[in-house]
Length: 158
Image (cartoon, rainbow, N blue to C red; front, side, top):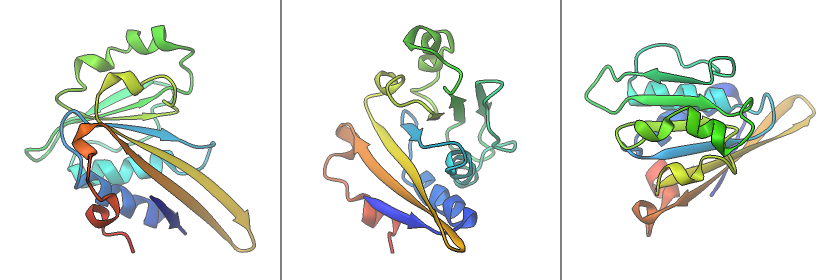
């Protein structure tokens, strides 16, 4: 499924919609160039999950845990930009909390897919031209939990 996102607020709104379909144990792997909107999407997911604290780029701390302010799952938000391989991912102990949390990993493609059987792979690309900067968000669901699930219907795609 591919969605065009014209502005940062639309990216946050998409994150809120994605949060509504996530459950404990789900892994979200975000991929895209610097400035594509990965952290903005994560902020929307955090808002949709109702977690404590500002969801900011975890580049320098590598991972943050945001407890739920409701009865939902906590959000583990990690950034693999400075991670140089699977052994360093193991050092983060993300697998210790993945079953009870929603885990988002920016720059995680090729490194974290084995953390959970069910995941959303989200690739963000941007098209720069004219007066607007549109992002294309491609969402691919992996795992049994997503078999037969229509993401467009769940997300209210327009």
